[in-house]
Length: 403
Image (cartoon, rainbow, N blue to C red; front, side):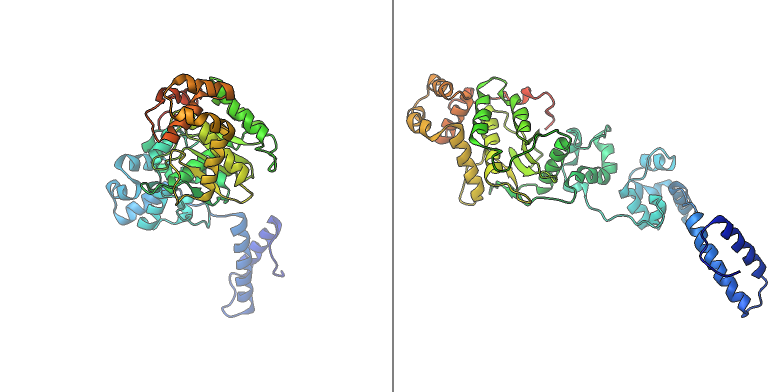
């Protein structure tokens, strides 16, 4: 029989029979060399078609315990707690990647056994839950499909974080932060916020976006004049969607100091997000138009992602694009010609009717006028009853209130 690569069961059976005939070959003879060759061919076929099943991970743990004389108490440092050890050994809890790494390093259990994937190695740790405000993220539904409590979620934190960041699809825009010297931004939390925002908009049905005329004067005027209505903020998502712009409301995470953001999705669609960190109508409308300014003036393919604290007064260290977006929002909400005519009188007045008169003439929310006066005066006690305190969040029933 001539040696050749075995391709089917018939050739495999014939090769086995030939190996049996050669088993009594004399050491050093041509028959022994032929036996070794056919044994290799048979082994290769069996490896491809009759792989040996990997041991069950729990059985492998129990074997190591018996081999090394370990007790369940000894497993706590690898698995996490006595209750978790009991649940794992009773097959009521799956091993997390964190547990697998500890068992692989501490007990020497092969990675392929723990993963139940022949030849596979444990992936490098990409996301450490200690870097993120993980409990807050769980409470506000950052991990789609997770229904357990935050403590249980931490056992699968690495897997949950990997799923959260999947919408980035390997594409992360260069961030531009509106910084404050007195506060350090948690960039991990900010990235998590952006990832969740992308997950929330990825299934939205959008009209095509025109990069040249998407944010034109007519569209801006329509958006701003929607503020005139009591439920104006609820009109915004549909207005933006029809223009080909994703809109998302998502509470800020701790130490992000985030009011709004503007960036492109990995698919190239514009995304505008607001946090309603300050539940005020004046902040809602200013932040929205500020982000539309970024989209009109600064966003381009593979360009930056803007994350803004719009309550922060501009300073010399600010990115010039942030200053430009501030000016753009200010002048679109109340045009220069109107402010030049009425601004001096409004700045000297404490009369509510003066605010209402300008708002009515421009067909915008009084909160926008009151907010402009407060900002120009740097006096945030005046007209506080006109800026729409606690009048934004309640318009969006799905807004997470846990933040």
